[in-house]
Amino acid sequence: MTVELIPLTGIPEIGEGDDVAAAVLAAAGAAGVAWQDGDVLVVTHKVVSKAEGRVVPVTDDAGYRRLAEEEAVAVVRRRGDLVIAQTRHGFICANAGVDRSNAVPGTAVLLPLDPDRSAHRIRMRILQDTGVDVPVIISDTFGRPWRRGLTDVAIGISGMAAVLDLKGTTDATGRELHVTEIAVADEIAAAADLVMGKAAAIPAAVVRGVAWPAGSGRATDLVRPAAEDLFR
Amino acid sequence: MTVELIPLTGIPEIGEGDDVAAAVLAAAGAAGVAWQDGDVLVVTHKVVSKAEGRVVPVTDDAGYRRLAEEEAVAVVRRRGDLVIAQTRHGFICANAGVDRSNAVPGTAVLLPLDPDRSAHRIRMRILQDTGVDVPVIISDTFGRPWRRGLTDVAIGISGMAAVLDLKGTTDATGRELHVTEIAVADEIAAAADLVMGKAAAIPAAVVRGVAWPAGSGRATDLVRPAAEDLFR
Image 1 (cartoon, rainbow over the protein chains, first blue to last red):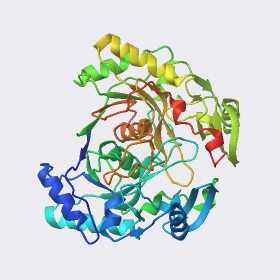
Image 2: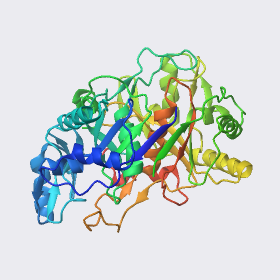
Image 3: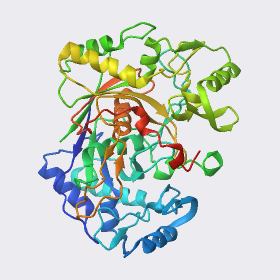
Image 4: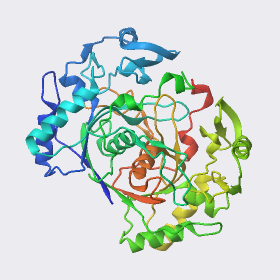
């Protein structure tokens, strides 16, 4: 089945106290997007953080570094200005998720305190308004070891499982699959970034037609437990 | 603009010497997919490797481990049966890309010797047959440090840049973007996996409507140079 990635354009600049779900619903309405069972909504964390007041003043590089240290619970690697750190949520990323791009000059945007809860709130509001239960993914842009370039990943989830577990299923030859866990929520976040873009300031997209795994996932399901992780 | 992810179903089991491009063209024809400018074709490496004869016998776990060591040019980490290794191409992945899933029992599939070249051949054939120049991405399924679950990435590219470089561009607030390189080819591979799936044995998909970066990229553009890499 064909999957569609539908950008939600026309969402205005979001500030503290603004209603992200209402802005998403209005943009979907204006674009003629009728919510369907099976849709997934992806929202970049930047607008969620701004709505939740997770914006702090920062004037210089030193202040920016200090912020990243404050947001970190553990530093995994450090080289020059780059700090790879674990956030309180468990995510490992550059500068503990503190970001100055798409922020008002003189400010930086922090990660939401509880992105799963932010996703849940948006999902409940869409359900209430439209009667359709749409899983919601909050995304952020992370780097990776070994590979150049960044990709979007899921840092908040509500209404679906984060990971598709293929354990016990077989491939086309009848052999049990060795690859047992697919990070579907991350693949959906990456796919949505193809229509959102960094410069275009499109903060949300509807992903239509994915056979996403059912369940009550949390974004921390995508964090590899430290004991299994060979790289921290 | 809405992006479509279109699975190419009905591609038969591929063996050594089979013509992957012809199989893709036939499947697209049967599905009524008329190639358009802007389309990207994603093909899982498994069928490319099989067509190129990159299949070897393996009878037991010890033989499988030996194969992975032979395919590796450097071992990055090892724990129990798991070997994270660098391939001759430069990719860092589990078992140097040697894979037994979706392989004939008693065999394992290796990575193509030159996946960019494999992508180029398929692209040229589609151009010849249809008159449309469609970038081609060869994908594989890789794990990541820190995050659970696997995602598809690009291991071969022809006809587009691998990475979108935003250096010098500004965000919606006029601030220069700190996130300067987006791994678009990896995001396209991950998106395509949403319609291909591991168990369904759909080895190819058309990604329609992405504003992919122009250029003559190679998959090794996605490999972080060792000197910049804090995790090997």
